[in-house]
Structure formats: C-alpha cells, structure tokens
Image (cartoon, rainbow, N blue to C red):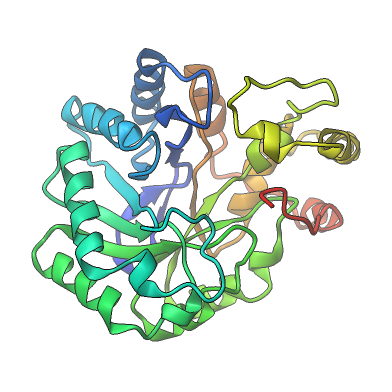
Length: 322
C-alpha cells in the first residue's frame, strides 16, 4: 500500500481508503455485519488506514461498525465522518438557508453522536454531508467547527461536495476554512479536473474521491438484465434505459483493458489515482475479495499518458442521481 498526504492536514493516508456507506445497510441491501467486519479487518491488514463513514449511513450503524474495528486494532487509523443536513435534503438545494441545514447547535449535537458511535475522543476529519458555496462566508458554521477543534473533538474539517457539482466549493476553497473536499471523480465524471483540482492544489486542500465505480457501472457488473433487491437505491439510479446506456459504454471501455489494467475496476481506480491532486479514493468494499483486489491497485504503478488520453474520450455528462 502506498500513502499520500491529505492536503494541509499533513497526515499520511492510504491511496485506497474504505468507503463505508455500503456496510451501513439501509439503501444498500445485502450487507451483513459479520462480513463487513471481516472486510474492514482485511483492509487494515492490507495496509489501508483511512475510513470514510457518515452519521446517516444506517442512522449511525456504519459508524458503530467502524468503532468496533477501531477497538480491536492497534494500528494508526484515520476516520472521516459526515454531519447529515438537518432538513435531510441531498443534495443541498439552491437557496437553502444555513440555519435549516447546519445550525451551530446541530453541528455540535451530531458530532457528539458520531463520537459516541465511533467510541473515540476525536474525529480525524469531520465533514458536512452536503454543501452550498453561498455559505462559505457564514460565521455560524465556522464558529461551531472552530469550537469543536478547540475542544479537541475534531481535528480537521471538510465538505462532501454535492453530486456532480465540483465547482460548488470554489468559494470555500479560497477562504482557507476547509482542510479537505470529498468529490465524485471517475472515468465518466472527469469535471473536477477542470477547476476544482487546480484550486485545491493551490490551497493545499486534500481530495477524497468518492464513487470511483459510478455505483457499480465501472466494474462491468451492470447489464441490461441486472436486478437489484426491492429497496436498493440502484433501482432508481439505473432506472429506465440507463442500464442499457451503461452497458454500451462499458463495452467500448473494455477495449482499453490490457497490461496496464486487467479489469475494469482496476482501470477505474488507477484512473482516479493518476491525478496528483487526489489524496485517496474510497471504493465501497463489502467482501474480503473486493478488499484484496482494490487494495492491490496501490502498488506504485501509474497509467501511461497514452492510456489516460484514451480515457478522456469516455467522459459522460449526466447525473443519474436525479
């Protein structure tokens, strides 16, 4: 496992981190705690030291599982979590008022709940689970975050940028108030390279890449005949003719597999890691087999510029979350 510095935080985290949404249950069906814990331990055994979770994942269940992992390990592990919007609107809607989404007392209350769930004294990276750049200069959220830092309850602060809105954090970046940004970035969604990544490099903001597999599309697992459990969110994400659209694009992408990347999942992760602005990529991993495959990508090898140039042609402007 290779490690990179998480921006201005100065901490060294594994290039491949653990995205813990799937182990929270709820919208992802089929997760079992025993299997999830095995996968978490396998990840740490593989050198992974960064885990991203959220209070909203299974209403704290994901955090609690991560807390059980932390209790049983002696390694230095870093955990990022997130405060859900008080109005429970994902993503934050244009015009939303901060007082309805992240009021100061709510920020503190959620942080203290996450501390209990994780069974830790301090959260390494506390994040807002949605963001609007209109709030960048608002004193209320910043005063609450500053107080939590002063009290030693959180070490660093960041935001999870709204789905497919990478430029909706440029104002915040310029303020110097954020240590990290979490953003969707993958072979299909390459827009963060346009403005966000250069600005983050300028201000030394750590980048946490989420959704590297486009909710499974970039693993090749989605076909026109794919069926998901009734309550699985992928029924909505891949609704109508979207599975067919994915299948057609993935068929073309497979033509690029070879010595540099033997599987689509490997190609997807190596693409995310090729950009110097990226600190870590956090795929969801609910099985030991997936952990082993994903962690093995962090071996120091980088994709050639020739292959990166070919992957540029696979950019896909769309938002399946809508």
